[in-house]
Image (cartoon, rainbow, N blue to C red):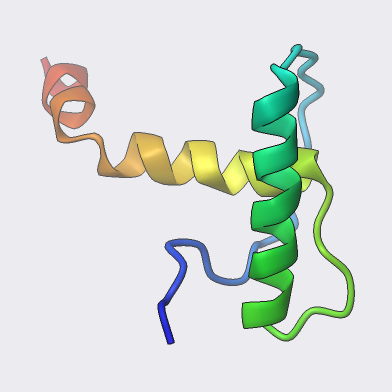
Length: 72
C-alpha cells in the first residue's frame, strides 16, 4: 500500500486565516481528506481547513531552499 506524506494530525490552538481556493483545489483537498481518513483509520475525513494546515506545514518543513534562506 502506498503511504501518504501526512500521518495523524495534532490538534493545536488555531489562528484564524481566511482565504479563497479554486474549486479544483477544494475538490482535491476533499478527496485527499477522504483517502487520509481511510488510510489512518478515521471514521470521518477531516475538513479541508484541517487537512490543509499540516500540508502547508509539511511543505514549509521540507523546503530546503526556504530553510537555507531562513537561516541567513
